[in-house]
Amino acid sequence: DVRISPKSIKLSQSNDCIVRWSVKGGVENIDHFIILATRNGMTLPIGSHHSQSLRGGFLYVDTSQKQVPGRVTYSIVPILSNFTRGLERKLGSIIIPGDG
Image (cartoon, rainbow, N blue to C red; front, top):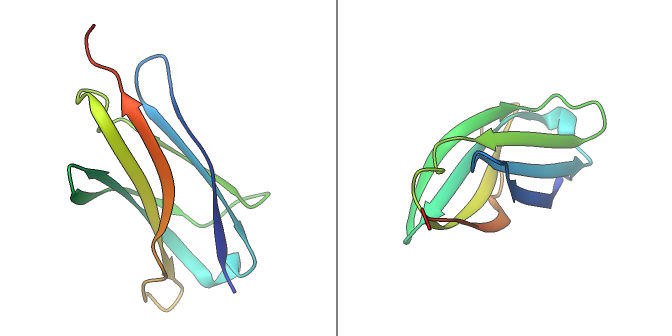
């Protein structure tokens, strides 16, 4: 049984979004993760991350959203070793500041 837990979403000094999550149980059954970003009701895949982790923690730096002010919500979908989709897990939201 795979349990994905959100850890944090923070902005870097350059407005990159730093997304962290952890996995407990069954990480060996995950091939990779698809990272999704949602804005104004539209969800798009923005990246992927392999499933290898030393301590069950994962970090993804999203550079695709930093030029667009407003709220962005992140979620991930595990892609299992047999290449079926696992359950989507919402990780949280953050607001990208505008230019003043």
